[in-house]
Image (cartoon, rainbow, N blue to C red; front, side, top):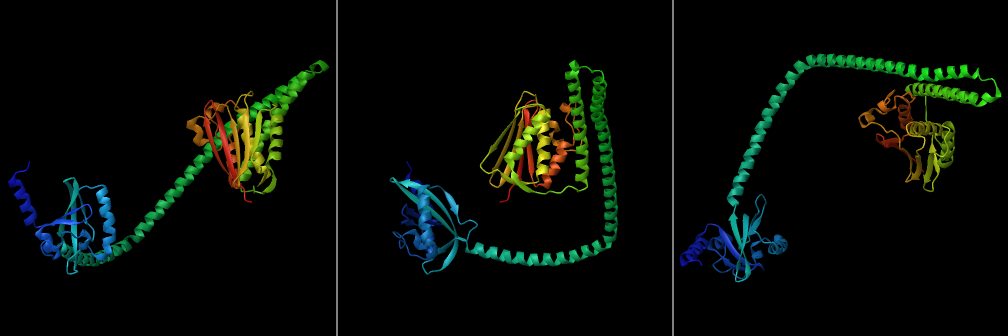
Length: 413
């Protein structure tokens, strides 16, 4: 229990404090107010007892304060308000003055009592205004001095302009020289890669053709027909491979020179794709390997038919070349929300993750496909065709699990 001395000390603190102290209940009714607070607001002793705390606020703030008091009662805790804000209180004579207020609460006889500690910050505000005025004057002087310095700097810059121009010109010349060197280096690397690829890709089918032609001459009898047909098929396949290589070179050359233009036409994606699948099965001598499905009711699209055919033949050929002959290849088309989406998914050898960033570079071939015929130009050409048709392509691949290419073309109704 508190002693009488403690009580008297608290009472003296309340009565003689140079801080305004108001004690109110949870309804905002003033129950106690110290002399300093009475003097602060211009009231006589006990004149404010029983009145709502809002009597000490300007009229325009009273409504909002009732809500804030309700919020505080719901979650009472010690806090300061008004710091850094223009919080105003109202004297009895109608004069408004700036204040800072701290709130605290305690329980007495089972009821919540709220203590408001009020500080008049009029003098502080005046001091701040004077400081602001001084700051404005100081900023003005700084600005004037800055202008003087700026003029001096501009004069110095003018003096150095010629030197800077010469340095920029020299830097530009060095950059152009370095760019030319890098371009020459790139061309040299491309030539080396082309020679290496071409010597390998031409030698293999030409050797096959020469060998088959020599062997056909030995099979003269009717019983040798199967052997002759087998070698004839080898010659056809080799010729087709050489034709594909030359077509890649010609396509790349035309694309580089900007000779290929996009000529859209309207056609059925389903009919077009079914014919393409039959062609691919015949080319690879495999039936029902490509599983085609169209999703959605819309089948008419507008694209360059020849470009689209070249793109899909390239992707489907890769899917068949780089996966086992016994695995299916999923081929899906979908027209929805003014977009044509084409998905080609295989379950083949995949693309090594470290090499995927080079996939669309000219003559690039991943390390795990070097034993499979190819020029390394196909996907580079595909990317250029897609750019011409305003299409985009994404892919996902995991080595030894397969690859999925997704192509999207905008379709305008």
